[in-house]
Image (tube, rainbow over all chains, first blue to last red; front, top):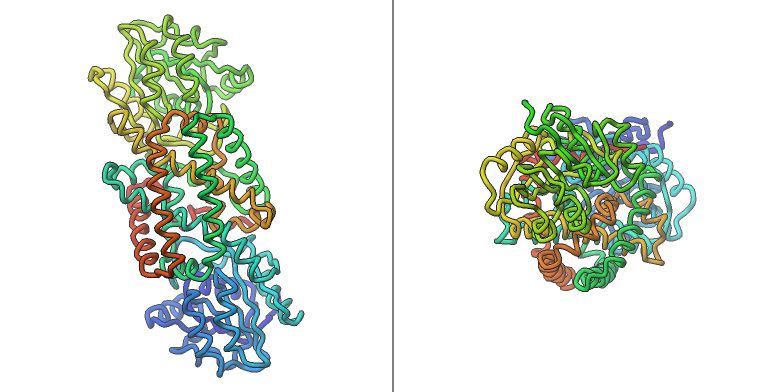
Length: 304
Length: 304
């Protein structure tokens, strides 16, 4: 694939930015990749791993001369980063981000984008429970979806950014910010909060020891602990910035959980059986769509 | 390892019994393995895959002459199977089971066990989301825990059964039935009900299509769909037979979920951050204990 941007500036050098750097290099999509991170240690690792051709101490320095700027910091840090880089953005540049919520990021970032610079919010639906400049890998986005937000942007810069994501291995869908925030409340934010809660409850029960919780986790619980090991700062910011949609879905979840608890209490086996049969279909759909492995137990196999 | 039983009878030939047959054969633990299942198709597959040396049409015929009988049917079917085999059990035989709840299984099975036959309830904490006679594999129990219930059984038959499980690759812990049912409510039953609920909610939301739920599932949701694809009959019976402990843990879960929802609503970022930091430690413990892979994303990697 041919080069799409001359100089890409990555603001933040964690799992997502690091994976973008490696995926862009894999396909030769960027002339030069530069970056910055608050921590000097992160900047050193990014250079040592070859994520960036150059690193800068400040975001203002990093964006100078870049035709694509990627904001890859926690959602709560977007406003201050945007304020810092705004005056230093090159005319004609595209700014995008990779935050897990979109309406709040638009509110935080858009006011700082000068005329002649295009802001296209984005969100790659990919990640692992690990974080930091060591965590990224070139294949992270292969076969996953990246959502781009179109709230009246020009066609050419949007198509170029979509082409970049496809070049990094992703499928691209375009939608508006509010729908994004609702869909992600269902497919990501609520599941994460529920997983965090279940792991917290298990950790809290004095009649069941942590050692029992750990030894006997293969009976189902361990599946929850993976997403409950995700980056605490990132997830704090997600929930604080997608309050309404997340609380709405959690309200629906609690209502449904109460209905199932009532079926257990009253011994309504037919209701439970019908419910558990219906949920099997979604799993099949996900495997058929290539969004998860069809191997039993995620293909983990036994770990003696 | 040397042979521990002359003739093992498997009642039910699904994922667990099939895996036991293959694991026993791998280590030469049984002289002969016979079995039965309600469905003729299941019996044919079990013979064709070599799970059993002989299959029988009825449980009564299958247990004749067996020195170990394994009840591997859904918990709700235990009472009728026990009533059927009781008169046909050989003196000195051991009867065990692999059900996911223990107090209800003891209540269902123990009255049908004649004098001179020993009943030792058991529960291997291993499985996948797949079921049936094709689903088993010899390595299923490697490194996992099997819990045996000691409510006053003699030492020799208990130690022999524990040795069998160790020979099939498992670690063995012994506990009483009520503690088992509480621990499993935490590490298995509540997580499964929560996963079923979250998948049901996603499937129900008319403003988010099933196709969006499927395409964007890699953002966290897909992890829940695996355990929500487990066998509906098995799980209906689990919830109907471990009501009290499961409802108690779900009550604790809801209380905790409400506290986190309140923190989101009031913008209490410190509370969220502290909570999400604490839950990371449990994941580390599980990986260090060899109960899950330490590879990111369960080692699934990208599936382009």
